[in-house]
Image 1 (cartoon, rainbow, N blue to C red):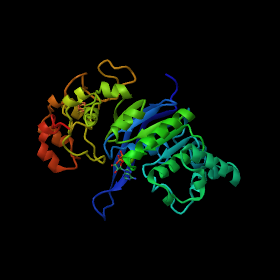
Image 2 (image 1 turned 60 degrees about the vertical axis):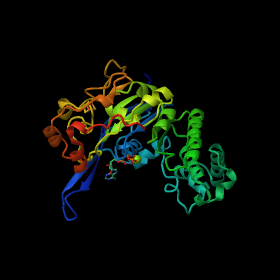
Image 3 (image 1 turned 30 degrees about the vertical axis):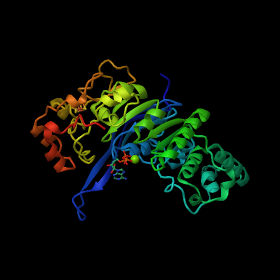
Image 4 (image 1 turned 45 degrees about the vertical axis):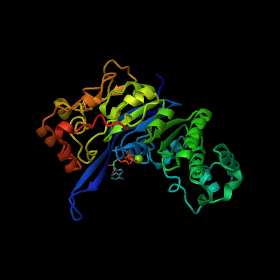
Length: 375
Ligand SMILES: Nc1ncnc2c1ncn2[C@@H]1O[C@H](COP(=O)(O)OP(=O)(O)OP(=O)(O)O)[C@@H](O)[C@H]1O
Ligand code: SF4
Ligand SMILES: [Mg+2]
């Protein structure tokens, strides 16, 4: 294996939050990202999926060093960037860019598009005003915008065009690595494919490496070489994209992927959607052992008391790692599983369940799936 362009080593990010009411001085910590390790090869796309609030954006911001890490290391292109100061990071910023979900929120409505796209050149002191204008118009053309619209304001563009402006700005300094955080989820479905195709074309043209965050599993399958699945601040499974879909090992991954209809109609007919019961526990006080044990159909006693490590299971190669004591065999039907942990274990192990009603309603034996519900 070649040296990865991005290496994330045991990264943890916690946010202090006030607890116990307005006048309380005590603070808790939100463990948004907890011990994540990932490697992204040059020229590849790593997809990152998981429920809302599982820590995807926080991890992305740690990698781009928009956040300081609580602990762990980020190595970019062979250089440890974990503790670089602002001035040192300026150099790295040329190579590491982000595209955000909201093309409206990330563009200043009072500035002309030419100067928004030209900002990276200006900040880095690259070229005179005239030279920058030429570069910006080239970029506009490359991302499918009319260079004549250089002097227009963001409000004069459609949602898709505004995301193209965001892409042009990210591309300006010819970065090596772009983090795309839900880049199309705010756009109309008809426009989403155009932006995805643009990103794929640009990857080929410029040899870009992407971290691609999305809720849309069909998009992630389409764009990714590898996919990492996050649950409550941790990566629970990572594999080559097709392998993850075809040899899903982690019960949480299986439940996520079951929401996506199989392109093969025969399989789609027989496929049963797995609906997890219970809320995502709070990252302030996550469950003991395997964090998924409060909702997992395969949970056993060991899952409550021991933390599983992310490693190859059931004879998988080193590229496919899963954090689970009882991973799924090929063809195993998760809807036939029922958790085998005692009420007392659940109660002591999950003080953090956000919804008391969901725990009461589901009970330990059914705190898992309502298998069999078809789509
Ligand atoms: N600045 C912050 N201060 C306190 N808590 C935060 C902060 N940013 C994120 N969190 C918390 O960290 C957890 C992870 O949030 P994050 O935004 O990374 O999730 P996400 O996976 O990107 O979710 P989504 O899919 O909704 O974008 C959440 O519980 C969130 O409330
Ligand atoms: S079987 Fe156990 S270790 Fe595996 S995901 Fe379920 S609770 Fe976690
Ligand atoms: Mg997010």
